[in-house]
Length: 96
Image (tube, rainbow, N blue to C red; front, top):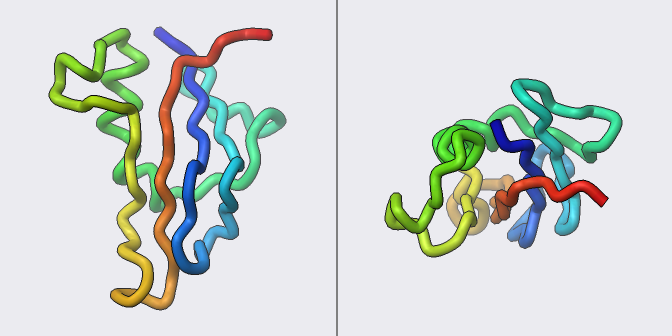
């Protein structure tokens, strides 16, 4: 399985989990690498999970109709909620 990095690309409003643009979550195998990750929002994984599984299994997301690996969290943000919404990018983790 592919290890992944999920990066917050854009935040609209105020994210209740405190995520800011540039924050990242690293997934190694079935685990969140907490020592390599910034803030983690459990609610965001509701939107991220289907894309995470497809990417980790090596599927080219373009074959699934996704031109990019961008996913938005489930909080719609202003003006629809008091919270904020985050746009995440999911990529295979390249070791440096």
